[in-house]
Image 1 (cartoon, rainbow, N blue to C red):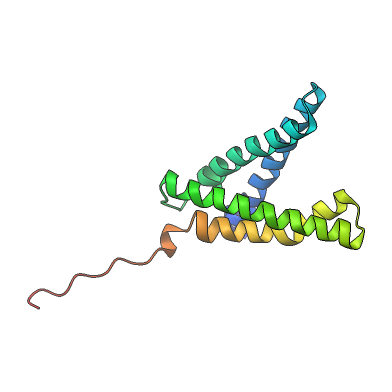
Image 2 (cartoon, rainbow, N blue to C red; image 1 turned 90 degrees about the vertical axis):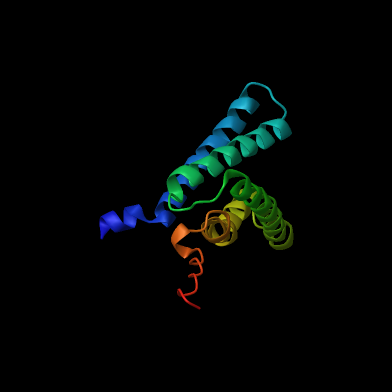
Length: 144
């Protein structure tokens, strides 16, 4: 059972997400430490993290997909934009509407909204399983 659990795309995806966070924040903190403006540091971390995330998910998490790079890449960018807007609005609602501190609001939005939606979008839209693809149409029987 443990081997099956570890082999799950969901477990690999959450691990990839954790690595992405380390890279994202590592780049941002490093740039800020060396004097980059906050906006540049934060945005650079997000861009580097997103590029890492795409290729890590493509290579390690969803090994059973057969999507071309351009198609899955375009869908990935679309979902990054969408999930960023949803996350931002959730954080605004929690922080400005309910008075939740920013860090708590961001983590709550990540855990309750972004992570579940993101993992489902990656599995079923960006990198759908080759097994889940529609079966080919059988040719008509000979003589018809």
